Image (cartoon, rainbow, N blue to C red):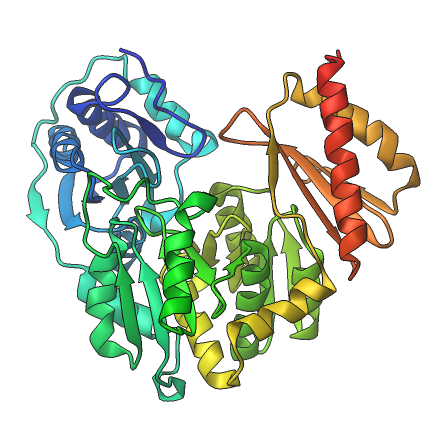
Length: 454
């Protein structure tokens, strides 16, 4: 059996050739063999194949002797929450996030919702699959567990309800799972909602729920404008990422949301550590310092961010890819907490989202992440480094290559999950400089690629 569905951070593949119920059951058995878990939370997303996959996973967990606590149809963050809240030994979410409808997968955690990735057990689970399995002397039990009410109460604890005022908010669940939670939150908040693609539908009739794709943004942007909304929010399929649109319908790059959330958290706490990724940093550093916080750089990727957050006891961590992590959420990522905090900020400040963001874009214009398919990524990155490093003020290899000059900087890195090189460029208040340096680097990368750098 092929195990190509095992990735760096999770399990993900096409149904049924890369992932199927037989393999799902074996993964459940291997999970228990590797982790020793006795009590495991399981949940599944809205994909048509998810209930069958979850049932097979549960059978494997029980056969290996683990008691299963099934929270049913949910988002990934509800598995994270329930694993910690109910003090379980681990949790597994059946989901393929924003992948096409013929895909499925799993995200796995240990106690306290600590991530299981290649370096922390996922490779061991992969390697255990080909060994024979024996049923445990006593099969594990199966239970259903209601976690949603406690989760909703927890979400509301991040904001001061007394500060909230009526706002009009466009929400786009992409026919994923976010609509189910938004319907439950509605009665707890004073906001008016314009709900798009709110009903869960594993057929994805409006396309794959991935707001990173530009072609998926227009429907939300247009609804914001048409309804004169204060902001728009869109989620991916398992809603562990959320994306923002200001009142003009403009899509807000995740980099600037990281700074906004860091500032909001530090205002509440009066200081503390904030974890950020190395791709774009100057805006975050500026805001964190001004709010009395301490910015700590971490390698990109949820497993790295979560580990560093624990090491630093950080309040918040953010990636420009729209993953946002919270200390009081077991250092895990949530797609619901960020929009609640942004809405609270709009109510407290009386400012529009565009005015909050515009000042930051003007101060630190950025290219956004640009992907290029490169035949020999290490050689191209090395050649770029050799050219730019001699005149640089600082160089870092925390994640890929980061090179900073007095007025601009760039990060160039290979993707952890795709065969591409990712470029990010930013400057200090000079958009023309940022654009010129971005064009220059892209041209040089293309030339090096065509020259087939050895």
